[in-house]
Length: 409
Ligand SMILES: Nc1ncnc2c1ncn2[C@@H]1O[C@H](COP(=O)(O)OP(=O)(O)O)[C@@H](O)[C@H]1O
Ligand SMILES: O=C(O)[C@@H](O)C(=O)COP(=O)(O)O
Image (cartoon, rainbow, N blue to C red; front, top):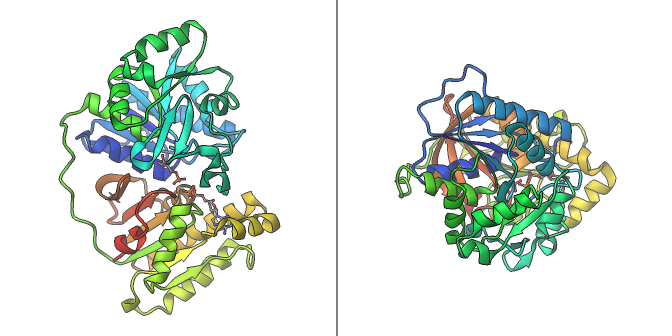
């Protein structure tokens, strides 16, 4: 059985659906599952944590607790899911969490890659690319919480870890030499092996080579490679019907793709309300005003959008005046409260854009987990919860420009 520990909620849905696509029955928990949790029959568990930007000690403690839960359930392989754009700060948590898990599991070498070619993320010679652009020159340099300005993965990881990092080159991957290279790195005392992968075939090769590794890390791409190696069936599941019910969209991502999707909602004439942390720094009153606006809407107007998303210039202005962490915390808290208010008013389909934002929404709604349903976009599945709510937690950069409009019809 595979057990994945994801550092944010959208990443968790992304890795869960990568497993499910290969016929692996996957249960998703938001937060640490209770000790006595009895999920339906499954082959994989994904535990969604909100540790990407948490304090280090907290991120490590939560990840170790998740490891303990997974081990108590007999998990054979642990997968640490981080972002395909390696989102983290210099004080970030990818290194410390991996250090702690590898120590706890006594694993000498951990292979990993953020490569996810279907989303345009590829790793070559240890450098991460977003499309044709090195990560540090991509739009990720403007991220509100984890601006990425370096593209060389071993340096990024070593900056956060007590251990050294090396590369398994594309030539070694394609020559079937991953195992040999891992043994070499281990002999040199290098703990982390960043595996080059520029297409899906490379990820399948890596998945086969790592099928028995106790601890592996990366984005959803390599999890898909491992899933293929463990697959119950080689086929995608038949698409389930898209959910129905009153919908609302909440957007807190400032990623380039989300900005396009927010603009598409506004262009489509959907009612849209902007949460402005410059005008009001009290999450409670921000949310109260947004809900008062919602109460005036005509149901015929279509599913509404409540958003904080801002372009890089507007974001810099807010962060300069209110502070980056403070403005993010205010807006996440406000969006969580809006989500609660919307559900109290009868919304049953909650669509949320952004990883941190989705964590805030799901936590405010108190949803313990769910089953993975149809994909509204690649890596963006509907999540069916026991309470009857359906959730779409969209990674900031995922989905076509029309995704928010279409999923909320
Ligand atoms: N206008 C804004 N000013 C300051 N921070 C913002 C603004 N809009 C959103 N944020 C914050 O930016 C962060 C975006 O992160 P996240 O939701 O993870 O998006 P992504 O998936 O694109 O990384 C959130 O913490 C959110 O509250
Ligand atoms: O790996 C990815 O790109 C996603 O699964 C993911 O983690 C995205 O995070 P957010 O952009 O913060 O939603």
